[in-house]
Image (cartoon, rainbow, N blue to C red; front, side):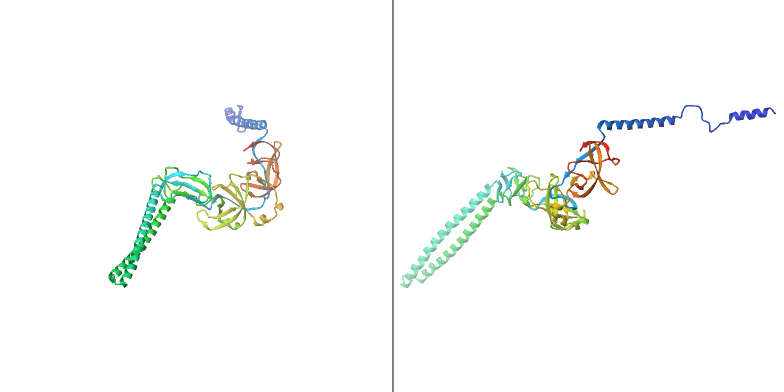
Length: 415
């Protein structure tokens, strides 16, 4: 019986207590977690120290620009397009020939009828001289025939007088009259020959004039296509050895803008509607313009309608093929007195952000980001109008981080 308690004691010693922890070192996982947390803390501290050394979170800024006088009319639609010329011509010779003179360069102003180039006219001058010689020959033959006719007429008068006195026969008198009629016909024929020769002279003169290339209208040369020694022709000749034009001439008074407006918004555009145009080359220059016409057809591939826009005034800075942004204004806003229009500033679109129902910007002031609630107007080219809450010359933060807070320390980095 003593053996039974010993077995129970031995089994009790072998039982594992699940709630007990071995007295060994902490698990390896605990060390890993502790190390990661420490590394993140060190990285955050290093980043904070770096920002502090630079003065704050780096941000990009832009300066709020004052709107030009008269600006501020509401924009109902914005579009982009290009400056085009309604009157543009590739000037070419009317005959095939070799260029001997080019009397212009790109950018030259030429008047209608001004000589732009000359072709080799050796053959044309020879043809003109030949035609003139034929004309002179025909005129000389006419003088000879007229003299012969006059002689025949005198012979007829003499024979008629002699017939009355029965000194010559009636047959001789009739022969003299026949000679007069024949000579008269020959004179008429020779006169027609003179007219033909004169026409040949005029044709040869035209061919000679074709060797001189003149400006068809007043304008500016924008391209020079041929050089001395090259062959030009009004017809295209394969191989690339023959030019089809001397140069390109543009009437700068015919410049206008062509834009493609999405057909879903074409109801916002009307002929005569005021437009503000901004050239990509001069983003601060607002050019008063107006709608000339809406082309009555749509482009099915792009779902757009072409609109022609005219400039209210001309300027030498406006040249063909320039990119341009246009803002179609409301008719009522355009007709309102200028002094009653709201004035404000222009800022980049990425300086604005929504905070609930408010439009806000962050202004850089004394190294801090200052939150401002603003009143937003329409668009002016690529900029947005801020009508209230911001002054011209203030630095606004663009592309601000989503977690940027009011009064946060920042460092200005210009774009």
